Image 1: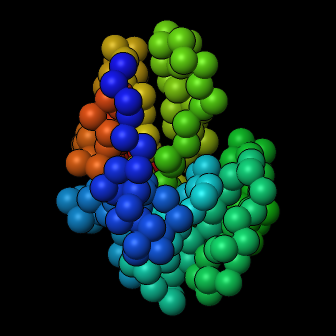
Image 2: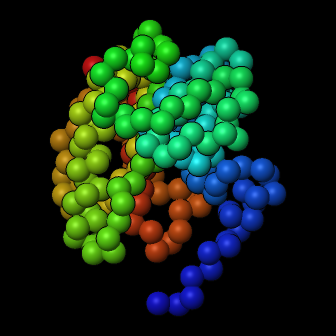
Length: 198
């Protein structure tokens, strides 16, 4: 293994542009390519911490939109002052009713950049990742309105590919993307679903 250049271009760019993490550029590329977010939308971000996806989303949706972040980590206070943002310390799997998040109706968009805690054992990590992806798909009908959009991070494996094929008919459009800012060694890619058929 070569010495991994952690402080790479996207890390530096995120620092300069005052974003909380380099993952901002993944969402930016996804959104520019697939137009997932629009002004005035209601968005929920699963496992938002530290919050760069929320920073990006809050700009795009503007003052009439709202983005709700949920994570088991302590609330990131840097996001507390942003007008169209609400963050909660909670597991998404414990949300039985959307009023717990201060909203009445389902969201226009569900974003999930969540990853399971990893062990470094490839097969274990792949299985954990797929479990998480399946669990998120399982709660989607609770959170996402019919016609809504969905972005989720997936750790690549044959079983993940098979599972995703089985879910594809849930959406009018279903795309896979490995953003340019994803590190080349990374096995992650993103699934973009548009027009949810609840």
